[in-house]
Image 1 (cartoon, helix red, strand yellow):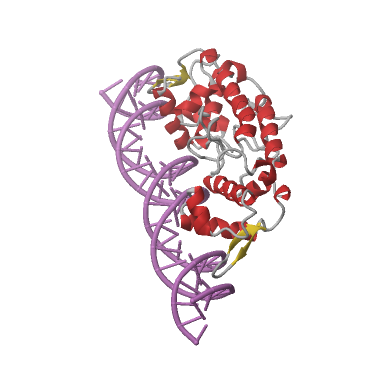
Image 2: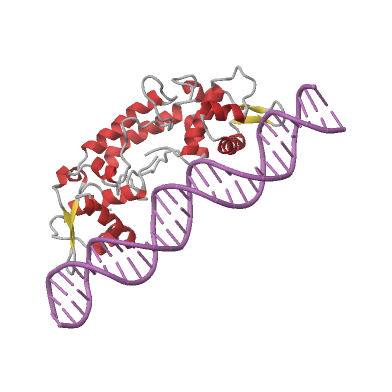
Length: 137
Length: 137
DNA sequence: TCCAATTACTACTACTAGGTAGAATTTAAA
DNA sequence: TTTAAATTCTACCTAGTAGTAGTAATTGGA
């Protein structure tokens, strides 16, 4: 009952970048150190975030990354979608493939409330909302 | 954001057994067919459920499985615990290891409500509560 | 007593997520 | 123009989850 590691890293990376927009560019090395994410794994994730158009990369010396959109435009759910980790409408807690009103799993009714709540939180929370909250990790 | 396959299977198996207590014993073959779970994988799970003392097995011809405790005594959370899949108190949505009031992750506050709700549902839902709900899968 | 139906055990394979290594490419500064 | 700092690409390794195969052990019934 957790997000996968890559999604967690991606959210933390983007929130960190959003929280440091006074700096023009942040390098992979700086992000890796600050967020305690293995450097090589982080660079792999960065490439995906660039392709997904959340961030812009500047190659070469003095290069780095910065947000491509405004922080309020990027929702947590958008990030989860890139890593196939968002909560699907028909998602069933017991994994049966067609859990709905007609034929529902044993936990269907109980599961609706937390599921909708999580969907709502992910869809409504933008980087702007979460950047600067709590610790800087 | 999902339970692992084994936990899902285990819950469905136990709910099914609870829902068929009029039958003295249910065989692995019957469960495998009824619940559409690969036979060999199911037998492996059954062995774990026996060791965890949720069910009793009768070996040999005419053997099978039945609940070892009453359905109201077995909570969903007890099952999740066997497969290391229950929601821990300190569990953090962004995976940082020490997310609490002092040093909390960017999504800590939003995450509290659905997390507590899920914990509550898992801890309070017994097999008796869920058996017989919805479809028989 | 023997057989067939059943659970239990041991070991293996397949797939995927997480992570690492090394070299290629780009670019600003010296 | 050379070099060093940076991203990108390709390929691989590792560990854990899911699932399979074969056989041993148990036991009721013919």
